Image 1: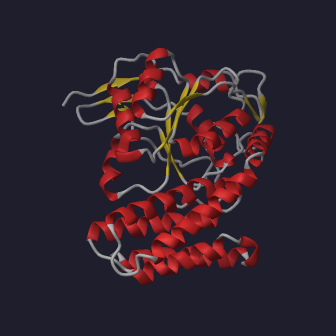
Image 2: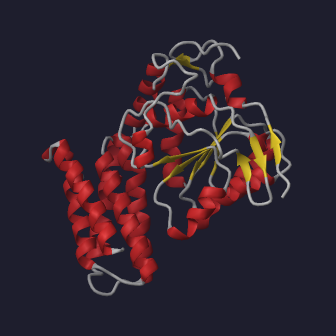
Length: 186
Length: 153
């Protein structure tokens, strides 16, 4: 892959699926339109999201974790275990508000590439999208887990601009080694 | 246990660095401009959610119903959804703390009106950030976190 152009992002041709409850969808659509995504696919349920995955190859999936009863995590786990090539390998980012205690394990093991904690900002989202674009983790299939390899050197997200709510986020401000700090948003 | 390791292409990487697109600064400006178009109505909605949180909580000082607890949790989550996008991150963190408190109280099958009440006060303070300096807002958020952890330990 060629060196990324300095300070630019091109999502015009990206096929992006947004999975969110009705209340948050418009805000997500506005943000991703701003990032350059022309026609993001929208799904309000895990079932519809899975249908979209079966209809078209996707480059990125953004999921709001606040669908009821852990539906978001069920969708991601089902996608990872599906035979929908190549979309089963598509990077998935979860935007997570509060996770009820009875959903924490499900959220941890669903197979998402990255979890972003609310409250979010456009800057935070774009940082994480670019981080995911630079990711080269292998995809692991086990009886108990299917998704990106979780045994990777955790260098954290690219340079934090704001204090995250997780202690690990705040501590891991080091930029990724393969992205020159001056090029990142980041 | 069988472990299968695959190395699929990162499809996002194949498009995001293509020539063209826009500068990162422009992408952020455009996203914020798109959000600003709905800023007024969103802040009105946020205010209505906060009013509803106060009303539902205050009618449940002693014996909250399960339905009202669910409503409070959902409303707090909606405040969390919106707050950061419209320049009120501390309000979002306070709403998150209230979600956490309600979830912990529910799990322990107990109730603490003082802990909920202090969150209601915190939400009111943080909903109008101009009246409190940034360090004061951070202190409020930190205080709410401590209340949550202490009460629902």
